[in-house]
Image (cartoon, rainbow, N blue to C red; front, side, top):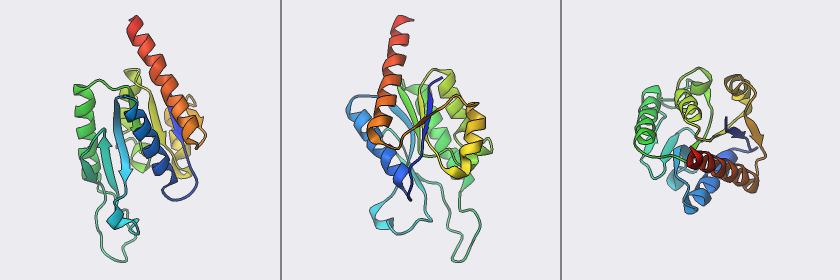
Length: 177
């Protein structure tokens, strides 16, 4: 099973790291599916909105909802998240994928929803999976991965090396089959 997580300190650091990794791998010709957090320049100071860029080239799907000023409830729009999962699922069913990348194993995945089933499907299909992780959901991810995931250093070169090794290994196995 080729599964890895990466966690960086600082708001948005993991998102930036994964975006850089995905950009480099895409430039190398790696076929990537999944979702990354998209931060639009006009919303740079608004941390309440959450948009996902569905890989490889969109669309961008807003998965948060505006609950109004002063609201302390969860802003996740579960329906929009499930729509995004459906779009990515259709894409991976129709296209060959070398690597699956997800911005975050978050609360939805921790609770058995969101991209969790698709992550398991990718692993069952021998597609390497890279996910962003936070302390808040580390225990749930470790339970999900049964301790078999690699914890990568939050360094672009280290993450790229893991991804390239897994994609190369998977290509060799596919060619031999």
